Length: 88
Image 1: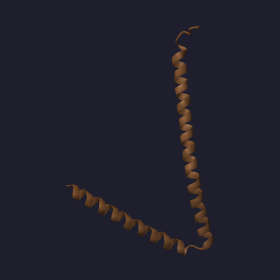
Image 2 (image 1 turned 135 degrees about the horizontal axis):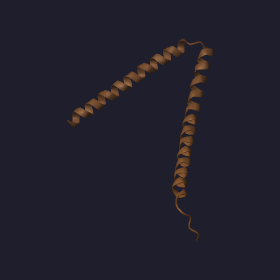
Image 3 (image 1 turned 60 degrees about the vertical axis):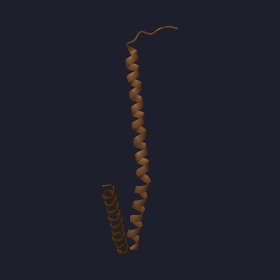
Image 4 (image 1 turned 30 degrees about the vertical axis):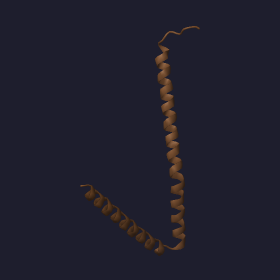
């Protein structure tokens, strides 16, 4: 049973590598057929996508954490509002 799983994993990885190289070859052929101005625009678009995606994701996470913090503080204030205050 263990050897069958290893064979399946090996087959899956070899097929994945084969498909990856096939797609890389297709992408290379498509890039070679593009004129230089279009290739430049494609490269700029990919660069912008790579630069903006992590920034947008980090901003999203930051604002979600800020929202969670405000929610926790608001719930704590509401919970403590009904309790009488004790002077020290």
